[in-house]
Amino acid sequence: MKKRLFQIACVIFLISYLAYLISNKDSSNVIPASDESTKNAIEPLQLYQNVDSQLIAERNKLYLLMLKHTVPYEEPSEADKSYFLRNITHIDSVVNTCVEFIHQNKEDELISLLETELPNFYAHPHNNVDNEMALHYMMEELYNRHCKSDEEYLAKVIPMAEWRVMHIEALENEHPAYSLALIELVFYYTWSKNYDKAIFNGEKLSAYASQRGDEEALIYSSSLLSEIYNRIGQKAKSDSCINGVKDLPQFNKIHEEVKGNLSDLID
Image 1: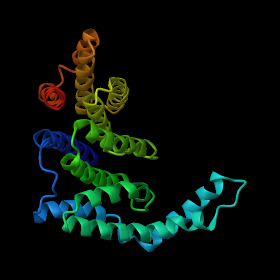
Image 2: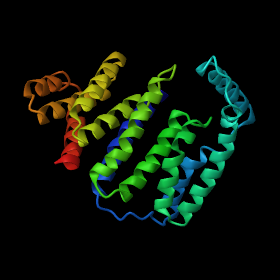
Image 3: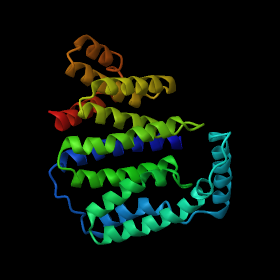
Image 4: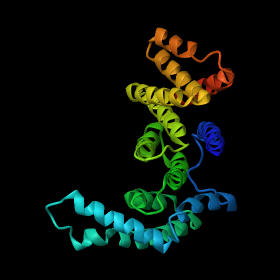
């Protein structure tokens, strides 16, 4: 039940976030100076600090084992062996610098540092899916204020959206945000008019929703696919997508949300 509620909350958040992007496409690229906005920017970063010593030991042991088997016939260098532990201290320092940039409203420096250090954030023991999504969304909001065109914005956010999906798919157990991650990726690919990849991920979402019996995610996938097929002139496929979900209780509400958001973003 908790996973279900979390998934619903994620979908609601996505729609709200997309609406925010639409309403702020031409906003000033300055970090708002309010206490709340500062807090929202800092909190995702601080998720990567204060690592438990037991977790460090467990993850470092796993890292060394993986390192050993990555190149089985070659002894890893001392730098490679110590990277995991050094990176924890390094990211702690990076976060502190980022916080300083946030307080100083140095958006360009903040973005540059985050982009440079993102692979090191991914290698951090606190980089679970939830923390990663929080970090990504904070960066996406920065890009929304900073990027001068839709093309520039999409070039920044799509690789992160792809990474989220790949991260979740690599997990041993299902993560409740998988549908959200796919919905977001389909939106971004549709916005960028990369319809082949939008369809690929839309069909992946549809199969996942059908398998789990998730009617809301199925409506999202079907509505998205219908809009995509309609935009590339494949009306029969567009109608087919809708026919499969049009009798479900949430269809009208979700379908109109999808159409409205895509229309505002693309048209």
